[in-house]
Length: 85
Image 1: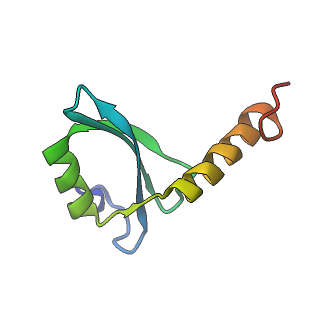
Image 2: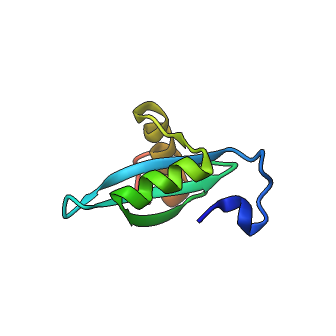
């Protein structure tokens, strides 16, 4: 499951943001290429998740960047951070 196999340029940055664990066995995470604001949500068992990250040479999204991404998503959803219309 290597993103370069799908035709993605090998130099494009890849990001993983861990969202949580399911049943203490699966890792729920977001994966993005090039822009951490546009991501897909995936679930893999822990060993497969580790292999996925290794093959794709991902950069883990830290807490500060995750908070910034959440605020940006709120702006898109509600028009301004934290305010529902």
